[in-house]
Image 1 (cartoon, rainbow, N blue to C red):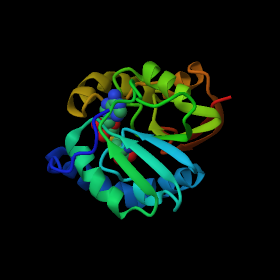
Image 2 (cartoon, rainbow, N blue to C red):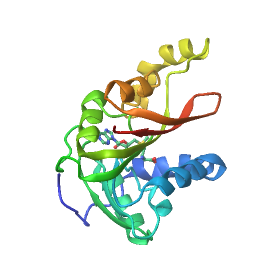
Image 3 (cartoon, helix red, strand yellow):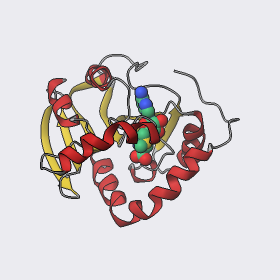
Image 4 (cartoon, protein in one colour):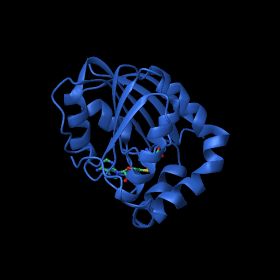
Length: 204
Ligand SMILES: C[S@@+](CC[C@H](N)C(=O)[O-])C[C@H]1O[C@@H](n2cnc3c(N)ncnc32)[C@H](O)[C@@H]1O
């Protein structure tokens, strides 16, 4: 994990991402973020933190380590970290290689990240390792639809979309991967006709 760097300017893609997300955040995503963050207490890891849109929702006293591989996103996230009421530390790093001891965190949060990580099985194995037994994995994620023709359309669009959107997969069965990694799904709330899932899973 690279240590904090304050010199890199915020990247253009980070600014574009925030601009595109702004109406969506206000309309719905902010409420989902707030609900998940309310469950994240103690020592929390956020993977793929992006520009730090989640940070404002963590409660005071929460100790958040936020990993983000993209330097432009990470630079923007650091600015948001300094305004958060929780303690938030941002570092560059990938979910597939978590530089933390076993059973170190009380909760791990990932919002729209597992769709993009290159090796989600490996990332989830790492998340399982660094969570304490009983610790929670908190997710907001878009998934491969269960109904047709939505599912078929996603499969058709997935390769092109992945090229346009930094590797984001429209056809990923993230919940299946979460279960296969050994997590118990505690709650699953569907949004947008089941396209997006708000999930609480627990390491047994
Ligand atoms: C769609 S953005 C979501 C950002 C943020 N979580 C949010 O809710 O706005 C996906 C993020 O995952 C990051 N990412 C891509 N590959 C990753 C990996 N292997 N490990 C961790 N994060 C990754 C990207 O750099 C990007 O910031």
